[in-house]
Length: 123
Image (tube, rainbow, N blue to C red; front, side, top):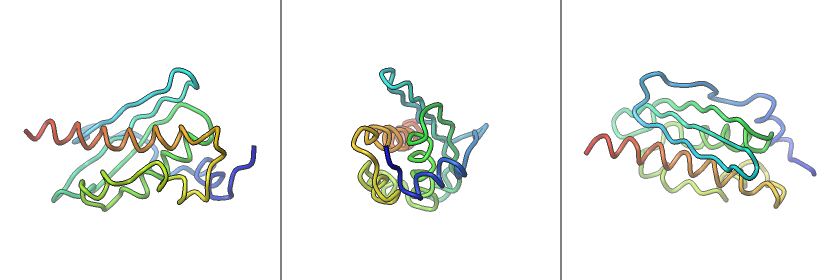
């Protein structure tokens, strides 16, 4: 299985790793079939993602896609971040092997879930 240099870089040097203790929104998703589990934590300021962190337990592609998702979302408005798709994540990483596309799925889903969690608290 071949990974792009960008995937390997985000796996070896993941961005925004960690947890935000008093996060405004948290999204957690998992795929029991492959064993990947990820959580994304967001801090929102003026309707923008001011800070974002993640914890992922899974394969290299899962870590890389979550890292890239946080990079794509940081600084965006909540509405802009909600439009980030799994394809956007895979494209930014220079592609993923077809068998690993579900990883980008999970990362985008976790982001969207964190935003929904935040919005649910605001109501």
